[in-house]
Length: 203
Ligand SMILES: [Zn+2]
Image (cartoon, rainbow, N blue to C red; front, top):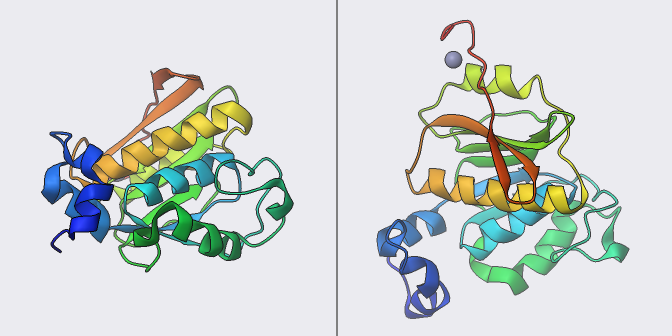
């Protein structure tokens, strides 16, 4: 996919980053995720992912209280995510609309299928966590790790977690970083390690 002139202008700031470049921007535009999220973490992630040029296809789940932010107004809480995002995403970035790609971006608990990349937004009781899997990562270890986690935090911690999740998803689409991993988001800007649990096959 070659970039059009309007896309070069729109994405110029990230194209200038050495890790992205023109080729990387083409990968971001070629990728897409199914979004399974109703709260601030998932919707913040969706906004950043869409702004970067990657497709976001939302599900029918109703938006949760606390979801309001820069994509969703308070009056839209309770409406289906697909309906609201289908209406507001064109204003963020029309490139994000036609569904494509095999990625998944979801708030825990969630089901996972497809090739990936997968990004899970969750919580372990004291902090927000992101667990991620690129197309080469072990799905069993991803499942073993996410099975121990709960829903992501709301409020400012959830918003920051969503921004982190979007960045991690973009790195996976660019082919950067490990194919499986996780991190904790303890307070705004405070990242910690998250131990990945081995599946029966990996030990
Ligand atoms: Zn494994």
